[in-house]
Length: 163
Image (tube, rainbow, N blue to C red):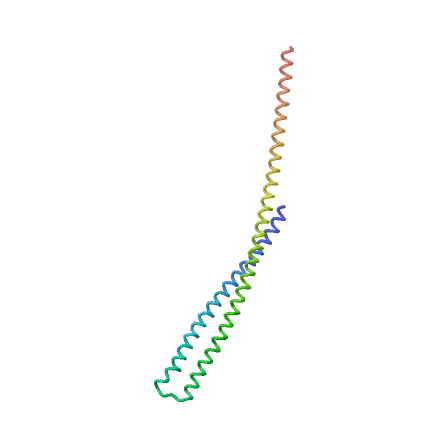
């Protein structure tokens, strides 16, 4: 039984390590998500400034070439913003997958913990049953030994009384 408990304890440790690995992966992906969100915010601010520069040109005279470059700048920012949003979508899909794997690892570990606890409880009960059986044997032996003594005393008393 002890070997079985040790074997399942090793399996439990492996499952807990898998769970910790998934937790670390999830934390890294969440940090990556935060980085992408900050990047989206900064690109949004950059786009807003580029649009303000583009429309702010109405107050002063600018060449069509400058307007064209400003418009191209806005397009480039929008393209980077779109790519970053796709990246965010990919990161969130990975997070969802990792959360599902983490949940599965957690279930596996909990199932193994409960099985291991049941094995340990059974082993403890078995040990206590053996111990109780040994105590019962000792008690019976002492009781029988005490009966034998008292019957020998009774025989002595009868012999002395008959004399």
